[in-house]
Amino acid sequence: MTSGYIIDCHCHIASLEHVPKSFIDGVIGNVVASFLAQGIPASHSKISKMYEKKMDDPFCDDLVAEMADAGIVKSILLAADFTYALKDCRFTIEESFLRHWDVLTKHPGKFDVFGGVDPRWGHDGVALFERALVEFGFSGFKVYPPCGFSPSDPALFPFYELCAAHRLPVLVHIGPTSPALSFETCNPFLIDVAARNFPSVNFILAHAAVSFREECVMMAAYRPNVFLDVSGYQTSIRNGVECAVGGLVSRGVDHKILFGTDWPVFRTQSTQRMFVEALTNQGGGLSGRDETVTARILHGNVERLLALRRQGLSMSASAA
Amino acid sequence: MTAYNSGNDDLDNAVIALIARAARKKRPVTLDLQLQTDLGFDSLAITALVFQFEELLRVDLSEIDLGQIGQLRTVKDALLASRKIIELTRGAG
Image 1 (cartoon, each protein chain N blue to C red):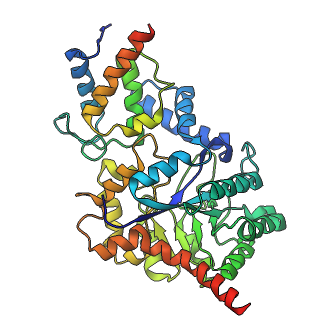
Image 2 (image 1 turned 180 degrees about the vertical axis):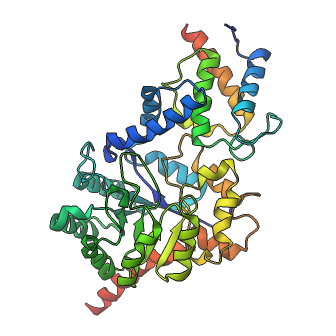
Image 3 (image 1 turned 120 degrees about the vertical axis):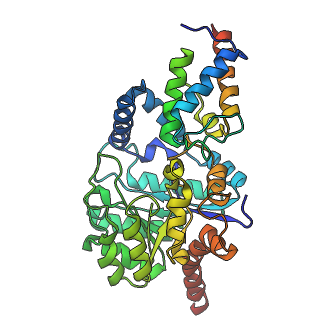
């Protein structure tokens, strides 16, 4: 176990209420195809049952217990908005936000929430996001480009303006995902226009240890307000985490890398504690590193981003 | 069809052989090896292993608590879990 504490910058509520059925069916379809090709007896309905079982923590009680066991003091919950692109989600995006607010209230101090709104909802969407910041206490914006828009789409600029005003970070999904969605808009270079136009907003490219690694490193190295999260590194365990995460850390952008697990996606694979150990123990991407580098990645970098908001709030309070 | 009993050497050997075949990192399988870091089991490989267990043990694991699967750390843990599954199915049968 690592010394010091950990902040997980990439988690989701484990509940099917927030994810459209067509999204899940697409993911399962890929798994079934892979298993059948290997001669492994698998059916869509069986994998679907397994998927349902890992999504049974709607108020994050299990997650809080796993965090305590792993030394994770806080996790950021991301509320992606699939509801404009896919019409079979149980919750509307407003209902999803309200549930995230319930979780914040139930587990004080354990979570921050980044809320996502599809820009095609227009003024209503902007109003909902502003309400989430002011009334629900959300701490950032989540963008999911595979829903069919570039992260630099001008329709997102009102959201980025709010983030600039409130000093909040934006987390952007990178890479392919469920085949129910588009992969055209999942490239990290697509963030460049927004990052240039909003230099005071910090953009976090998610899954940089998994997808478009080279492009993500370039963006983080040359664009001051672009950061990377390593969530999903668990997929690299078969080839060695050292290669995936260590490869990023060695590129001189360790001041821009944030720890993340993508809970509950890898819940069948192992526990949050074991995922932390896979990074920090011998052979992990963070083992043998300078302690200050490890501390930056496990908590310091994301704390710096989250602290901007608190500084802004305290400045507003002293001005009033 | 093989009739396995919990604690049966045949069962243990069959489970170890299954793990050895499914491992992403090929090496001699011993009880103390970690499934994830030593043998390279990722979430897909673990799911595949569950289906192969079903076939081997002739049981339905679709109701299994996935939290417990995530807790399997070592080859020994997997062996103990398979023995427990056999005991449960015998009890239910």
